[in-house]
View 1: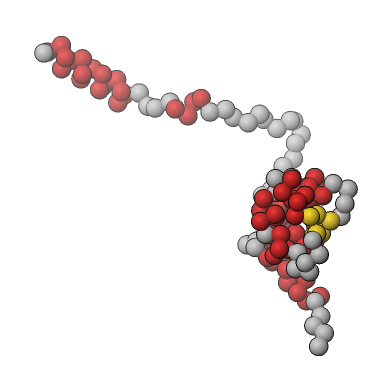
View 2 (view 1 turned 60 degrees about the vertical axis):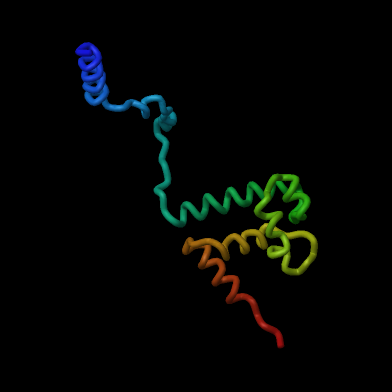
Length: 129
């Protein structure tokens, strides 16, 4: 009985004295090459990166065409655009341009740069009565 109590006490002391090392097995990204200059994280820089990624995704999905159909969006696994295609294709043409997709995304953005583009687009729209 004494051996069990001593063993349990010893085990508890060992567990409490050594900190958990679970994070040691996580990999770290490789260091940047010498001379690499990283752009500071600013709202404008982030918006520029998002715009570049959106354009790349559009080019992959649309191929050489300046227009994207709902089926092309589906085929490119661009589900968000395929799911909201009718909202983006306000003219009901059956295809959308990059500018239409960007305007749709900007309208949902919380970023000031995207909001400024939405405002600029709105000021260029003229109502004809």
